[in-house]
Image 1: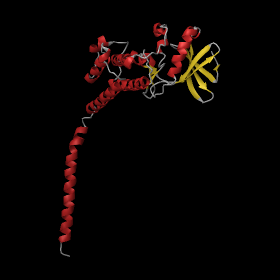
Image 2 (image 1 turned 30 degrees about the vertical axis):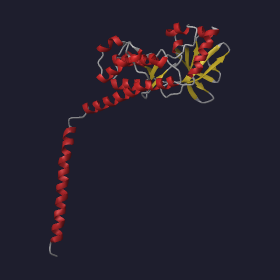
Image 3 (image 1 turned 120 degrees about the horizontal axis):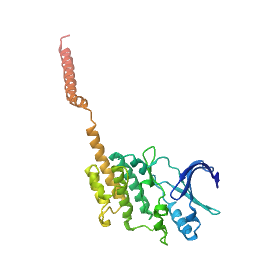
Image 4 (image 1 turned 90 degrees about the vertical axis):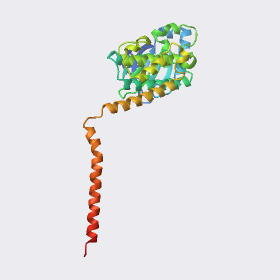
Length: 289
């Protein structure tokens, strides 16, 4: 195993990633833990592909958002190219959905966070263009983090686009593809194992408000989808608030009802006690000394 890369001390090997081998490392200058991806030889050894990849990677370093794993730097050393990014503990949404459907409230919260990140990236002119559940991690604190933003087309599953002869990160108009992909991931979270796709929406149990959002996000006509990820994020948060109210109403304990109904009785008793005290004071004051 590699022991050092520049001023990064390798701690352990995370495993093979879509862009190359991934390591957990220590930045000896800044004292932080990072994830390092040593980019695959088939990208690095081809001068044309290497140049395009480096252009996309450097564009990705401009992104800064709480729900995007930050790409700190892109380094070249001899024949090697490696990416240094924020180390994010957690499990991918793909692994989470393999265990079964997610609670709708939890799914809505994660999807809203991802939509926020998409909105920020789109404003910078950077699209993900291959958003999948394996690229989204949920941290132990419940935050969503998108990995490999701007570089997903260089993963093995997207290499066909990487061979197109132009930058793989050329953004689509309005970024509706990212919105469609996020809709598919939300449906996957609600359905559980695998990628259900729009055709299976009717077989998935979900709140009607969520169904309406998915019907728009997954519309076959791109012009009828959400025009901006920020709009999708806002609607998801509105649905989240509705679900919160609904959950609070359904979880109200039965013994809470007498407590609520007893408040007027307690108020009357308090009023009677005050009136009795006032009457006693008046009577005492009117007594002959």
